[in-house]
Image: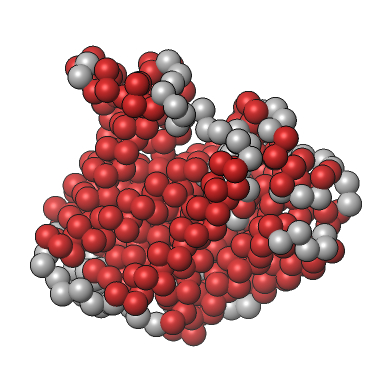
Length: 397
């Protein structure tokens, strides 16, 4: 892919990310609703520009995205989380013209403390057409996939990008078009992981202003997609710092790290708003420590956890196998240990969260493991391809 196409892809990624986040900003600041309509028009124009400009390039992504849009429009929202949480929040924003109606904590089963970036953006589709039909805002969930997908097209050659898209389809499946957020958070997570590695740890460190701003916007988006996003970004920061400490790297690029730490602020502000208005989370409450300590010393809990998250899930086993084969073929030490740090930290945090839940431990594991596994399966699978991309001479296919 010519360098001008790669540069264009990164710039259009920045533009689309800006308009996605701006939909949340408009509602957060209680600005007039017509601004969110204008914002969406510009977003759709940017998406159309990506399709039209450099028509013969990015063909696989353009075809792939059209297919998931058609699948999204042609399937009903039957998933519980989609209908009763994400689209329900979107519907409230549309009819109340505000993200702050959650103050009443109506329908608490819908988790009113959840961040509202995706519902804010998807509500703009309903605002633009002027009426509510769930299939219209549901399609917005697929448009949010565009920025990370376009971004990776600028990082991989055509054949490896086809493999990357195949990995995304294999590991995420219906999460790409059923209105769930696990596929979205997975893609934004691996994008942030890659950007942090490229900026701080790779041998060819990227310090351009465009790359830093892209990383900042991806990081903000990650925290505002789901509650897990805050933990995932914390994991990336911690893994980056731990790697630098163990490698005894000099504390360079401190300014860049401080800039990217600003990504935590919007989500922290949202959580403070929820706390002030007594909007609680059913995972972390007053019984947090009462729940966690007895479970920590019960060996059966560890057996259950690793059974559902590792040993009985064929996709994570496939992802681990692909990862090990990739690094056997091309052992990039920095990238390998960076991935291991992130994988182990992620596994540890998931373990602690499930040990601390006030809900039934086994039931919670059974109902959440298949979704959570998608994130680190995609992480391992994607970084296997990115690892081979870094050795262009040996694996130039």
